[in-house]
Length: 339
Image 1: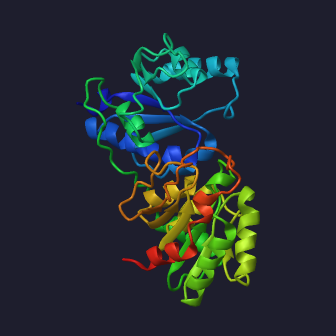
Image 2: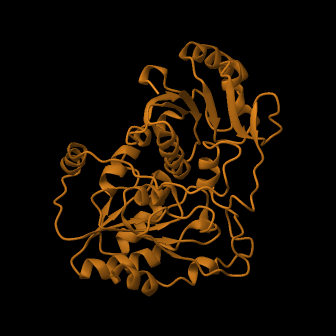
Image 3: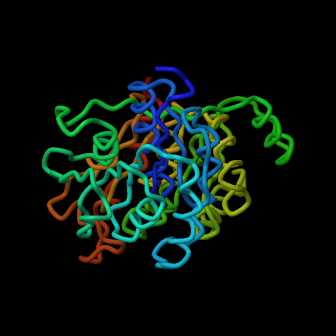
């Protein structure tokens, strides 16, 4: 295929960090099928620092609406603006009805997605989601980039976001870091809720022991994770470098790229670390490691597989949080030490 006749594809992207990382598996799949295809991604502007590190993506287009916001007129307006781009196909990763409006008003000829919230008419290349066959989020994303007749579940390429040395150097200088020895990154937050968060005191015990062995310990998270990070730092005599709430997503990505090992809850940063090809110890409580695992052969998952898990709740419905509190720091330390 000649490059000037390459397929132009608009992907309507997800609004979660982890899902956007996993979406790269779809982008890679599309490029494997047609190396000259152009992939543009419609997504929240805060995801651009991830998309910028995915070489398969040509252009990131800002979604002008917040997650959950309807904004019909804005969707119609953006759809009409996108008509001139001449897209051949759109692939919708969100399942919400409203997510199909922009591609519809953009008059994109092939509109691919799962039926979702009764999107008949808005989509014309509809797929039925068989959750028993497509058990993983990444499989569901990749399947949308394949013909309807493709065998399922599909093989999926693992995400690999790229890091530039000059960006690494900028964050080193900004935060006055002296990289020496090994770096342990701890990600004690999880946007979804407390039932996905390993106790901060357990993170602190892991941090204490690794600091005693000469490791640096760096703490990551958003503003919402500051309390957990402060607990860890306080319990380690303030010997950690606390980046929670102090970095942009782009800076967090570049800092994580400098770590040797990452201990993390099931969170967006877990998927970022996996795409950076880091050694990961991933801790699962209320969520299912089979549904959204870290896509990385170096990753080690700890899940107790209790009868009450996975419940997928934000807060433990039984009030005991045993799925996380019974994962002991020694288990994590043993996996850090393992080859």
